[in-house]
Image (cartoon, one colour):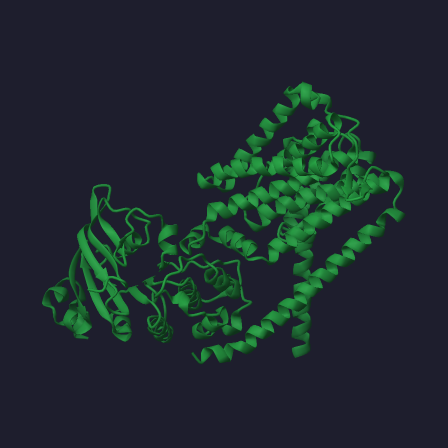
Amino acid sequence: MDESQSLALESVTVRFGGLTVLDDLSLRFGHSPISSLIGPNGAGKTTVFNTFSGIVKPVSGSLLLNGKDMTGHSPIEIARAGVVRKFQVPTVFHNLSVGNNLKVAAQSPRIETAGSAKDIRWSTGDVAEKLGLSSKMKTLAAELSHGERQWLEIGMAFLAHPRFLLLDEPAAGLGPEESDHTAGLIRTISEFCKTIVIEHDMRFIRELGGDVTVLHQGRLLKQGTMEEIEADHIVRDVYLGRDADA
Amino acid sequence: MTAVDTVAVPNNANSARDWISGARTLGGTGLLLAALAILPSFLGPFNIVLGAQILAYSVVALSLQLLWGRAGQLSFGQAAFFGMGAYAYAILGTRYELNGWYILAAALVIPAGTALILGYFLFFGRVRDAYFSIVTLAFVLVANQVVISWRSVTGGDTGLTRVPGLVLPFGGFEVDFTSRNGRYYLGLLIFSIALFVALLVRRSSFGLVLEAIRDDENRASFLGYNTPMYLTMAFTLSAALAGVAGGAFASISTLAAPDMIDQFLSIQILTWVAIGGRNYLAGALVGTVVMRVLNNQVSDVLPESWPLVVGLFFVVVVMFFPAGLVGGLAKLRAQLASRRVEKARA
């Protein structure tokens, strides 16, 4: 497999106290522009993201970015190497204007390498346009609606020249229309960098397309296309339940 | 991408607006400095020196504003750096026949170097906010104790007197800041430079990143910013400004005394910034002028109870104008403007 565009965990175990959150987990992303990470509560989805971004250090196993071992690197180093994160709770700079939020993200330090989104010179105005926030460049982020804040954070993460963009529940708390706009945004972004999304909303995941990874109790249950996942009876039992029939 | 064409226009409009706001800021700053430049003709001899001192104090207020207003870290150590600058100037000035530039450089480099080392250990050691304030308070207490105990060099409790005024050689000729007016213009010169530095920081991406760190340091570091390094740089720059202010103050007052390097001065500096408005550059000057003038006037009338009156004034201002006097005015102006817009619509 081509290792130049991959983000992977190899036999990673993460424990919080006595609790094993990730159990000898091996995962690989990058073959599809968009990947979704699903699983019941406590499956370890956010911990996978935390391991990818260096917040959580595994007890054993390794973190590989494009085949390079990044285990034990600090969050700052990993961010600079191109793994950028959007948090579950939207975290933007509240007392900065939308324009300045985007500017801070766009100027963030990066290691220049081929294949990162930095090759394309995006202006903050460009991104604001895509986000639908052009008219609010001077507005303080604190004054935005919840949905707008989600989009702003996605835009900031994108402007930080990611090679891998990790989005934790980008559609949480959004209405159907806002959620469609978000899915459209993510599809646009995935043309420029690999995008991994944690979501609960199966409708949203179908909308996104791409492949799906199912976690269960810190282990990999299945990785495949949406059709394969929905056809799998074990996945139906532990997670999808009636939702898959809908 | 077609998006590039569509945003070209708003981008240009933005830069034009930025340019206008930049020109307005420069124009306003120029007017202020011009007014300050002709002020000595209207002041009596005593008030000229007072004015010079207030200008030097305003620089230390600007230095705290940079750290507290922009980067969100409140330092009680500002008087330590101010005092280090003052004592560096006074010790070198009284003991050696040095070129004025070297003395001034020492008043800048010694505090800045100290802040670089202290800031490195504090910020990279994850010391922030209240803990940072406490450590800087301890630091000013230590600095004060050193000055009082190290009598042979610092003059102990009495400090150093008959400190020579600053003389700066420029190639063939030299600029003498020892006369009464000269001392005032020394104050104005360093105030202008400090204001220029503060304006540069405000408009630079360095300043923007500091504001981002103030808002949410974690978010900034997940964007790849080395946030402890940014905070250390802000602390160092702030100490450099405070040190130069202290050096100029020693030259203006012709002395260095322990009350230039103690916790009370640190707290006063903090009140100047809070009264003026920590997020408004003009606030540093306004707050310092208001508090220093009030201090002098009230202590003339009420030699015993003046701290009560000044303290009460501080509490009242902070209660009614949490963003400071300049911040309160800016808010009032914004409210009036929006009311005018509403009226025009109706």
